[in-house]
Image (cartoon, rainbow, N blue to C red):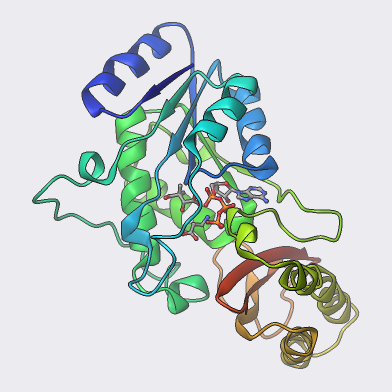
Length: 285
Ligand SMILES: Nc1ncnc2c1ncn2[C@@H]1O[C@H](COP(=O)(O)OP(=O)(O)OP(=O)(O)O)[C@@H](O)[C@H]1O
Ligand SMILES: CC(C)(CO)[C@@H](O)C(=O)[O-]
Ligand code: BAL
């Protein structure tokens, strides 16, 4: 397994891989955990070679966010990816990704407007732009993302469809179910920020979401169930709730009631300065 950090070296390396089969890309920001491993394993099922990108993308962080302290551990990531059979790590630095004069941004309107997009202005333009660059740099047959970032997955699929990308094509943007701890907490690199006390609070997020989903599925008014959920999160020790919303699973349109189409409960909440996100399916009404 090679680790490459220069674009001109990458071009030849991915060309060599393509000579002997298909390629799946797993874009990450590093500090890898079992959630990322599930993505790599899915990628190995899909394609002959797996390329993992590790890049803490500055343009998707807001000015007061955690770019500087975001966990980084390339050596541990390399060991884990070698054990998982990845062919190549693409780990550029910010100057390689955004050379002087860089001036382009991809905005996926509408889908980026609500939820994480409303709380983190510019975030999804940063994500879409870097993902499009990664797609063009690696030209993978498949790209694999986690359903933990449900809105991100919707934004990427929309971009691929709208811009008529073929490598990868929209059918080959693959989502992987959320990998969770025993108490339901979604694995996330940012969980490393949590103190032991914060971790206990975090462990209640998914159970409270499941309770709200049961309320909605058994016919409670959606607004009331979401308000109950917000109050329960605050009572459990979360400092604030960025959003707790029922949305159409595909269009992400906010829903005031179940419609018969697949729906999703989407939540982001903060413990101290740590922001956690989660989402779960809600059975159609
Ligand atoms: N628990 C998980 N289950 C499934 N996929 C995951 C999980 N955690 C992360 N991913 C996916 O891994 C990819 C890379 O994500 P990233 O490197 O930002 O990790 P992260 O743990 O989500 O970190 P963050 O703390 O930034 O949210 C994304 O597609 C993301 O959805
Ligand atoms: C897709 C991604 C690697 C783009 O920087 C990032 O948003 C992430 O890790 O989910
Ligand atoms: N996995 C999401 C990346 C971010 O929060 O910036």
